[in-house]
Image (cartoon, rainbow, N blue to C red):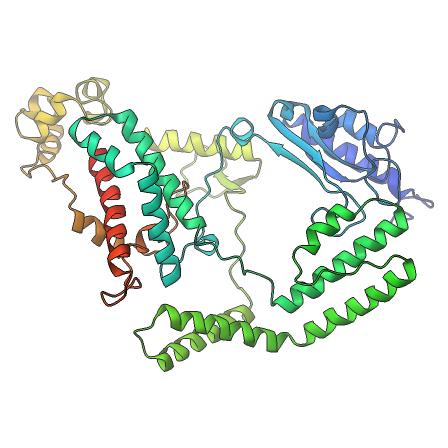
Length: 500
């Protein structure tokens, strides 16, 4: 390709620098912010014609130097002595750069480069913080697990007792105090999150304990080899891995011994991988036993059949190729009529817009035209908006709803009067009272897997209080659990009634 362009001795690095310079220049001229990171294989700044020219063209700054200055920069490559890895950001992002750091070698994964990170302030950078909903997969609390339910109810009730939640709820019943109610609501949220953490399962290891031990041993020996080859201290990282093993690895002290141990560790990993089917069967048996334990009142044979069907269905969908196109997570382009004033229903020519800022502008302009189409109708005048208010919340709007006002007072237009007359209602106000049993029934009918509040108060918290997996009246701890459950429900009901 280069020969066709007359370049018979191309320099790939110079071509990369030139192309990257053009790219960041174009992005900068179009008002885009840039985060550029990578292993650039040079000490940036030493050669003005290298990556330094890219930084100048894009108006980029070094995130690490911005936070920690240029002194005492660590080497990024295990067998090198200079810094070659960087994260550059646009100058405009500097106020939103909260943290930047460089980690020790092999802090998280085995690599011959150090890890780097930056932390940006999302509310300032994107004008808002991202909303995070608790995915059902990532929840620690499972309302169908007996042990989880019992632990959750105990911990919730214990937290309520330690923080006097129920007593404080009684106080605001007698005398309204919005500040105290907000504090109590935050304490209830903290109690729910605290109790959920007490249900956390710590046995989520990959495949099996054998595979975990084999892979961890391999990583430890690799880090020991790095220490012997580069004279870099790896004992802290090795110690952190050692505590994950039941039997710590004896560290070889010579290169020959380390290489011999590495060959043995690789053979062990391959052997464990060959036994994957047996390991999966063992794990499935453990899950089936837990499923039976969580449903003691059902026929074990039916539970086995249900469990095997679920595994078979999951495997079938895993093998099927997905025909659904992957979503980009949002609008990536819009098509608008050309010219833009044409009616979209009859337009023949269209223009594709892909620039995010322009996409937003075109959508807002379209919405303004769409919602402004009623401006010429009798009920869209400025005088009627003044009388009824934009949200229909004025006193005149209330009188109109309850048939206490003649529509002719609002507008002289006959059809407008007819429409306003149809707005009146003789239905009494909705009852805002929420009974204790009614609240429980609503939560019981709401599917547990629904993603709800970003605060972490997902529906598993409430289903744990209504699932029939708790002790039966014959159990010794029935009275204790049932009393604690009722106290937790009472707290939820009290704060809900106060908010209404």
